[in-house]
Image 1 (tube, rainbow, N blue to C red):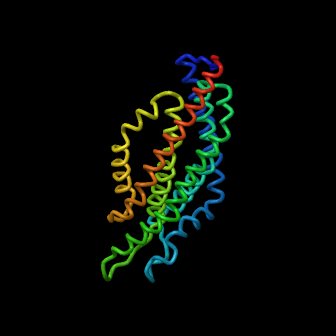
Image 2 (image 1 turned 90 degrees about the horizontal axis):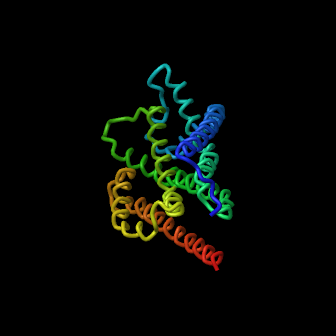
Image 3 (image 1 turned 120 degrees about the horizontal axis):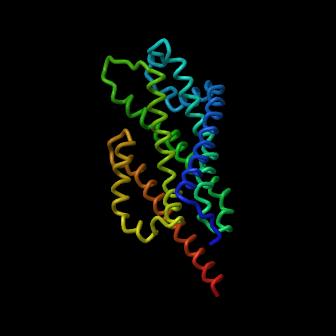
Length: 250
């Protein structure tokens, strides 16, 4: 294997470099996000559009400085998603010295796949989970009550859901990586299937606002399937690597 040998201090230097580049990308994308924060605001409000009872539609700020912090948070959310390809590219750059030269060429596919899964998880939450969560919560309103929609609080809740699902959908990528770099084997991970399935339902129970088993299953099963997908991909790529090694040794 023609890999770059690094000392512990060298690894820390490489990690520092990756963190610096990722931070710079986040800051730049954050500034762009603040500039386009009005569009992000409109997009975040779409899942609850026309859901609120009559007389509850107008959102409010609960403090004099909330408009500023709200706009900054919108920029941060937009910046995280815009900078995600660069963050994933730095992650690949950090682990690539331990790979074969041919394997390092997988950089672009890795960045594309990781970004797609991250954005896919966010989209899954935005179009499916968030509207269901809002509808269920509004349905619990007692009679003769009204909702005062705080933009700051709604943003915090919506961002938490969206980012959480974006990270959850990175499961196959993370499973593939830890197998690929040799931390664990797919066979070892397979032994923990039942625990992963149980953990998927625990995560779904936390992230899903509705208590019924059907909606929890809708959330839990994709998590488990993504785990299996990561193991399957790792198995296939490891077998391909072993065949290449056997061929080179012959």
